[in-house]
Structure formats: structure tokens, C-alpha cells
Length: 72
Image (cartoon, rainbow, N blue to C red; front, side):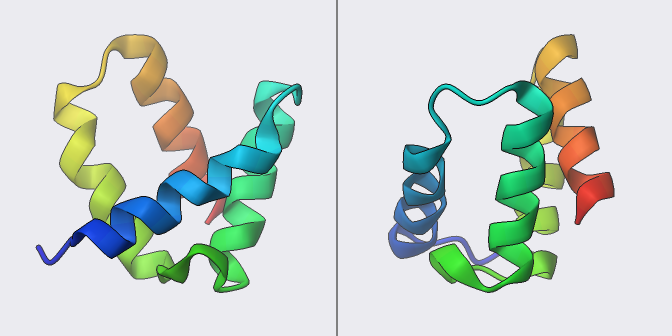
């Protein structure tokens, strides 16, 4: 998988505008941003990144990440 520092920084930048929103609002907004091409990653790249980190996530994190994948 080809994930570079720019991809990670772009993804981190997506989360700056999400403070104070509910979990469902955040997931919807992140999915919308990714689908719109904001943040510099494609839907495919986002899914690839999520699949890579899922095995390292705890149960609660996995639930949220799986919800994000379904939203994409």
C-alpha cells in the first residue's frame, strides 16, 4: 500500500472541522469530504487505509471505521 506523509496529513486535516459534532455527523461529513475529493485521497485509498488499520483497532474504533466504510 502506498500511503505517504502527505496522505496522512490530508486525512488529519479532514478532522479539524469535526469538533463538537455527533459521531454520526462526523462519519457522514468525513465520508462526504472523501467522496468530494477533499483531503487529497480517493474513496479507494480511504478504504484501503481503513482496512489496514482495522486489525489494530479496538472494538469501538472498529465499529466506527466500519460505519465509515459503509458510508463511502
